[in-house]
Length: 177
Picture (cartoon, rainbow, N blue to C red):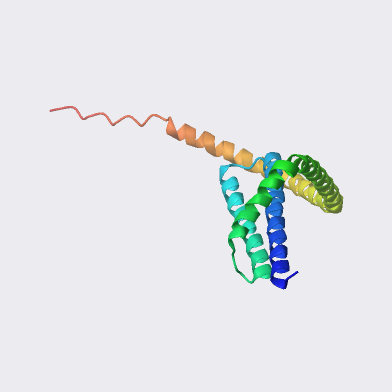
């Protein structure tokens, strides 16, 4: 077989693999979106990064395999690989990916709980000491608080007494002559 024909077959199969790889990435993205349910803005950002990743994948394969040459059959084979993947493999792969991501999420949640428990146990003595110190400070502060409340109450009573006091009566007018 001629070397250029063998190289073209290699490029053909690499492009077919790129289409299948894009389909697999799309299924991963689709399953993650169905599990995480991001909002509108996060979906737009994730879509952008998904297509940037796909473009980088195709560019990398084309650059490594053909030196950056884009041939007509390349434009046909990548979508053909993607279409074949989505038609024949995607339904089965999505179920496997869903269970895989579900188990990964459970494992991550378990690890976070263990880490949270370890941090809780690590900081428990410091927390207990801090609470004990704050309790002692509050206990020492109680007489001052009682005195300040008493002074505040007396000041309020004095202000209230001054506020509602009647003004003194004007002096009587001298009799007219």
